[in-house]
Amino acid sequence: MEKLWSKTKIGKMELPHRLSMAPMTRSRAQEDGTPGEEASLYYAQRASMGLIITEGVQPSDDGQGYLWSPWIYTEKHIEGWRKVTDAVHKADGYMYIQLMHAGRMSHPDNTPSSTTRSTFPHRARCRNVYCYRHAGYPRTT
Ligand SMILES: Cc1cc2nc3c(=O)[nH]c(=O)nc-3n(C[C@H](O)[C@H](O)[C@H](O)COP(=O)(O)O)c2cc1C
Figure (spheres, rainbow, N blue to C red):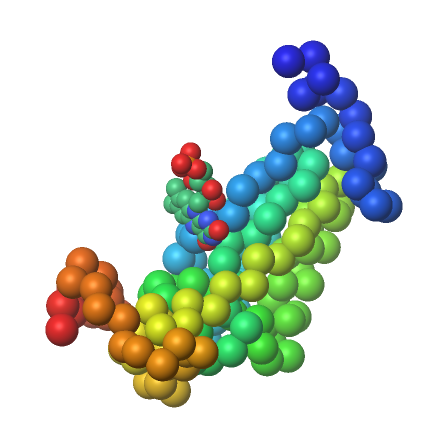
């Protein structure tokens, strides 16, 4: 246990301990996928974890799996994330982004282009996946 709290170095990162924050979907992005002030506050408050891996972030508009999860493929998204990382760096934390394309589990009701894309040729057969729409009710078909 003592080792867990000892300092360590990964690449250029000098970390205060050997714990890090696992990615967790927060569903708090703005409607256009930009992380807002809530995201800066949320991640800066957790900077003492030393190393934070962000929630899954969509790298393109056909990869969204959950409503309100953040994106990173426009200048505005990048600017939003820059504010988040600035806040975390100011609080002495490091941050890596988790890119998450939901592939064939993306849902056209969630993606801005209403399209999904997969490298896999077959449709996903899954009965228990619900898509929560902006109005707040799940669509089950
Ligand atoms: C609310 C919530 C959201 C999560 N979102 C992500 C995510 O965006 N990306 C990911 O790789 N894992 C995600 N996870 C998994 C966690 O990162 C972590 O691996 C997992 O919770 C730890 O395993 P355990 O819950 O079985 O102890 C999420 C977990 C929770 C509880």
